[in-house]
Length: 221
Length: 103
Image 1 (cartoon, each protein chain N blue to C red):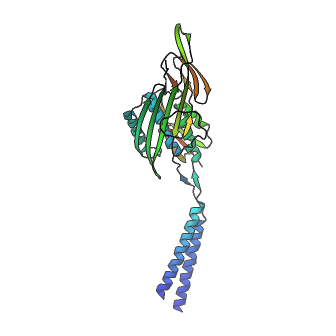
Image 2 (spheres, each protein chain N blue to C red):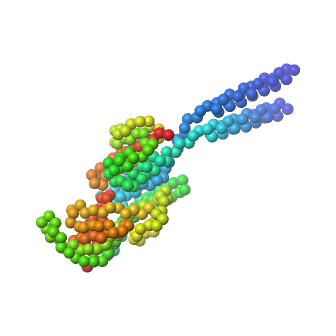
Image 3 (cartoon, rainbow over the protein chains, first blue to last red):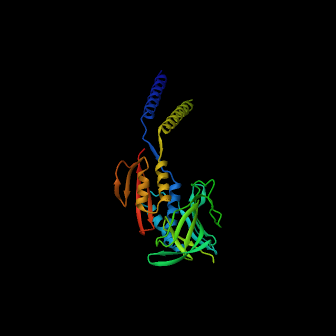
């Protein structure tokens, strides 16, 4: 009998425990936040790379900029992936200038690459004409310019039908055609297609894109 | 026999607690601030100046608070915050932007 009453007591404790747990489970839950990581961190690196190209990039400059990002990352919710390696490359031919920055980041999948490619390719001189500007006469050479940015990241989509963007390095991603301007106002610029411009410049000349990156027009004789 | 009973009771407890824990986990609403994070990504890709970035972010729905160099531009509930550095190529300045959203 004593044993039976003990079993009832145990059963009572069990039922009480289950009831309390069930009541606890029914309480309204607070929202749980999950930080999204990927696109913003890649965009931050591309943004930094564009700045590097605009101010005159080198491996040392890039390393310094990445180091400053890491410093911010330790105190602010930048949520940056660890940047294992960052380097800058430039290729110049008779009519094309290419600038690249590559970042090797460590994600949950392992080492992945975020890259920025900027390419400016000039065509042949089509014609030559004189232009007076602010009391000076310039001999302008008409040519075509293909200028584009490629933003590559495992978190960015790849442009399905990309406009012409001559890159010697095999990077694929978002292709963007930035606006081009001449701060001095001497050159004439007209967009004639996606990433393609008709430009008139006085010989080899440097324009600027909308991000302040120098756009070198190499005029062939 | 008593050991068997104790084991059975422990098993009942374990199963019950596991089920209730699973219920609690299911009830938690995951709030992924994807829109805010993506908006910041888009703004960073689009802009190289702080005014451009702020203008782009201000057009994004769901942003409750915006801080520039620690100064609130728009203040509100700060549930989830993201942070970015704007490298202004034209003014050669570095600006800290923090954007917060609420569920």
